[in-house]
Image (cartoon, rainbow, N blue to C red):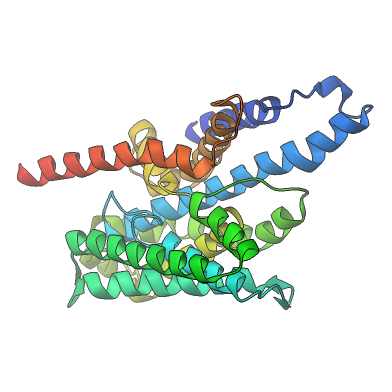
Amino acid sequence: MALTVLTAILLVSVAIGLAVGSQHIDLSQVLSDPFSNTLFFRLRLPRVLMGLVIGASLAVCGAALQALFRNPLADPFTLGVSGGGALGASIAIALGWSARVFGVPLVFMTSFIGAMVAVTLVRTIARTGAVVLPGALLLSGVAVNLVSSASVLTIQYMADSASALRILRWLVGSLDIVGMDSIYRMTIILAPAWVALLLMSRQLNLLAMDEDTAATLGVNIRRCEMMVHTLCALIVGVTVSTGGAIGFVGLIVPHAVRLMFGEDLRIVLPGSLLLGASFLILADALARTAMPSTELPVGAITGLMGGPAFLWLLRRRQQYSAM
């Protein structure tokens, strides 16, 4: 029932995303009018699908990381994963690495490496013996994000003007795309990673309760941690290298799913994937229509929504800890 409701929400969101924009499209003329056809199939539809893919990716990663770290404030942005991926992508852009290795763009690969380094560094700093301290986890994530942002700004300052403009796109986040080629490449990599995370819902359910309980029930904790780290770094690396460092999707969406349908990760993970896609499509639709004379970056919309949500969740966690 929950997934049926969320699928219906996604379909409505896709319809809204296809219908709104600075340029009106008469859907009845899409197949007959060359201008409407180009606008719809080369610009509007790819943009909506990009929002679907990136929103689903960030939200499912946020749900998995919150379960793994047993911290409701964890998400790819607050843990520095997005910042590390943006730094890796910025290095590749500044150095002009446009080549491909086995068909995979080097920007994807460097973004994945940056995300992997970030999540490993954050967990290493936050771990004391066998325990990951929640406060240290957030602080180390913030620190990694700050260092990554400062490094990206330095690279941007030293790069040529064309590269600097491309890096700026990574800083604000954007779904602006022409054609479907990038979406095909992303989906080939992301779809198997989504499936792998969804198949780990049972292990993550047990880890979300307690490591000792999970180990007693047969969960290989270290292998599970490494798989989640690698999958989330891969997913975030790919999304950041294409859409930029879009923040707070992985924080807001899993909480919304849990509020509506409970804590069971067999529902939360696929539910976050569906609702994350809907959320980013609608956020992008708002970014395109909020101001009539210009278009806002979608990262600004998610940041304006996610910042207050993060502060509310932090305050709520502090009140819960004080009880």
